[in-house]
Length: 65
Image (cartoon, rainbow, N blue to C red; front, side, top):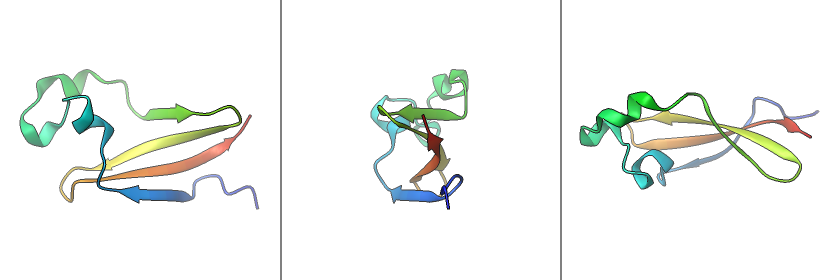
């Protein structure tokens, strides 16, 4: 009912790559990120998970407020 833990988006767009921190491209700074990464909007929080082998990023709903 609340949807927490549900994958709401799977995409090839990757924030790690956008920030030039992709471990597949040999970037050492990727290990310096505090994981799991999260993004927030006014009412919701989403956790980001990465499948670097398949070059995918998952946005997972964590909850509201």
